[in-house]
Length: 237
Image 1 (tube, rainbow, N blue to C red):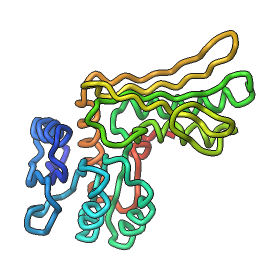
Image 2: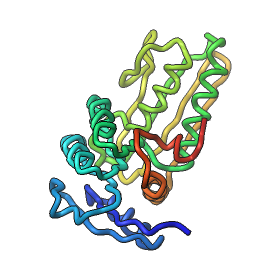
Image 3: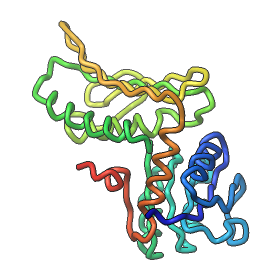
């Protein structure tokens, strides 16, 4: 039988509220809902922290929680230049950290499909690759963390050295970042030649898939030590 968790939500915007609703439906207890910096007092002794805040404060939020030996599941994007430092802090404090650019089951299967397709396309130089992501106008970072994960999956299986915003150029893989009202998230990968085009695409209909995946990740991480991703949670090679 699944253990009931005490969850602290650090970042209580739209995503935090959906996580709260779904976590309660699954029988878990929400002990804190914070839009301010976490402290020992306002966290209320959780089993796990789920962090969906914003890029400016994510590092400090995560660092504090890990230093209190509280495992953290983080879905905030736009701060990843400091991710290695966070992973070191998790190890030093004998706790666990799990980052996901996207917690949706479908997206994580899409990540695996994207890498497999990149491997298959590598010999065919007539095909130019381009990424596109569409999100709601409230999203603060561009490109999305999901698009960056897709780009990294292609880069490690292709001739590309890095990604860039806008069009693909030489060995820089391009990502178009489009912002439209109330779009939860659409990600596309295109391979285009003079005669045809291959496209793989994931479209989110709402945020529930992201929220449910974060809760599943939190359930999974309890009692573990180290740094993880949704590949570990879903046992995807």
